[in-house]
Length: 281
Length: 315
Image (cartoon, rainbow over the protein chains, first blue to last red):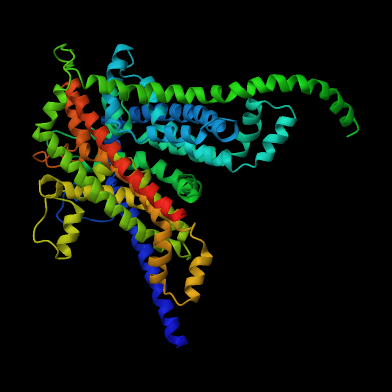
């Protein structure tokens, strides 16, 4: 009896490891293939049997995207837009989340639900009116309009995640601070914010990734390499007669590697931040 | 330390004054803190939605300067537009298939990750990779993987003997939508799994333990304890996933552009084309308003189901 029980346990264990291996392969294999592709010569890429390792390797695709396609310009645009979006999202979102979590606000759950429901709008529904407004205000093809739009796309999630963080800080701290004569602004800036730094790292990262990856609004509101962001640049990477898969792979690697490294470094915090709604259930 | 009591006394008289000021500040502070966020969302999200509704009742054309009130004409045109209905069907099919697949696969992954084993942290980290990759990059990545001539997927399937000849995955109207669903499932399932895992971890361990003592196997305890307790979380995750899948744009626009032969055209890409290729802002707005209404119905449907479920759980 015990030996068969142990055998069953062993089988379960093996199945578990196999399943996890499968999950890992499923999650990272396409990206690894892209990584390998980016170092392969076009000759290898169009041969009937794919070679999985980039041998002999080449940096030609990276040279192509930076020298011929001026890919660094897209990177600069994306960095400016995503950076500013993150900054404003955190400042505005923190103030709102602080008010909802720590100050006396009537219907604060109702307000929170309303804010969250805004993020569920089909984004295509706001493109046309915003396009007309931006044209009238002379905001077409500017960083400003992209930052404004991304701000409204990112704020609901930022407020929601920061609200969760602020709520985990014990209430007694507020009372002590108020007795010591701190107003709401002091309370937020010198007490609550420093205590929720991990929350800021997570939410900042979420806002940054959202703005860095957004495509439709960037496509509609920018034209030309001087304002277009990375996704638009990559989407337009096609030659007349063939698809430059090697160049595309190189560009994918360049824009994704920093994100992947950031996400791997902060994975615990990100998972915690993203899943807090489910945990609270 | 010795200075403290006297300082406290001196502050005492000041405190009463502060209290008066604070109560006024207390009333206005929350509004001031909320104001920037509310103003941003109102001007950049809520106002455009309402303005879109207004536009949908006009014949605004950017190419001809036409701009008059036409009542429900755009909506009438919508009901008889075969392109709209075909895009609507593709969108619904995509939403249903991807939500279902992602929920089921995500659940399977979550059950695996629920067990403790060495290296679990690495598996969870790896699962965030698809989520972090820009969707445009995902599209190009799957374009290369599923390429009809040199795609590695064709090669692998050929080696395994599963296909007789190379499939022109997203270049063939019979398999294009399937390819898009596969790409979406790849990108979103791991995230779904992490959400469901967080839900699983809230199921009290004592319940599972009690069932085990009563002789329930792992399979039985999953079906009769964890799954029922997880059901509300599952519904909420499914709802958010369905609402997000319904507005799919990037994958389709970059991978197929809606083709071949409109076989992957979805509502977002169709609206975008009507707006920015046709410059028909009136009709395009009616299209996106129709999307908005469908989204609201989906949300309402899930919402009612979730509320009923929660009532039953609590009562």
